[in-house]
Image (tube, rainbow, N blue to C red; front, top):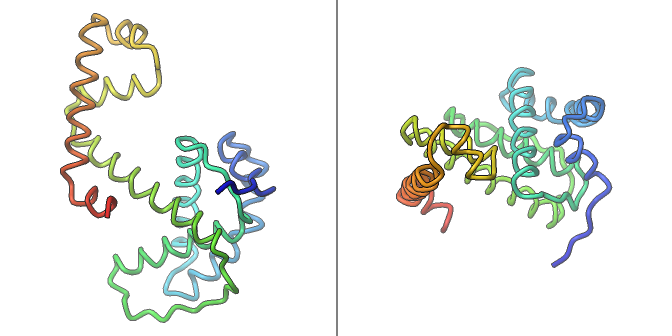
Length: 192
């Protein structure tokens, strides 16, 4: 199913380019609605800023890693992501009895789909990050370098090791990381 890129995709591009002019526009145009929602639902302005910040970081990572294309209005997509992130935060804090004050009109299937895609990406990203931290220091260092530098010859030179060693070590480290991810409970939840 080929969806048309929405004109609001400029916000995604701005995030990728770290365009401060457009980023402040995002805050000006969209944050008041999120702040208001969070304040009405057991939160404060600081909570709202944290949620907005975290959501922008998630969108940035997804756009960078997955060439994410926005096919619905940014406003609805962003609000829905922040809202769901806040509801998850409330669950974590044990505020199950909170009455959610809704003021959003209809949510389209497309908006919902985009939000779910982003949430799934975020869960996978967090799983990867947490398992990455379980690797030994040497593996972490090697993999960080290979994420930045694509050529293994360059990586070997940078780390001051032979090309053969760098390749073998990278393969071992990736194997270990994959094993850590696949043996985790979160991985099985995400697959389900």
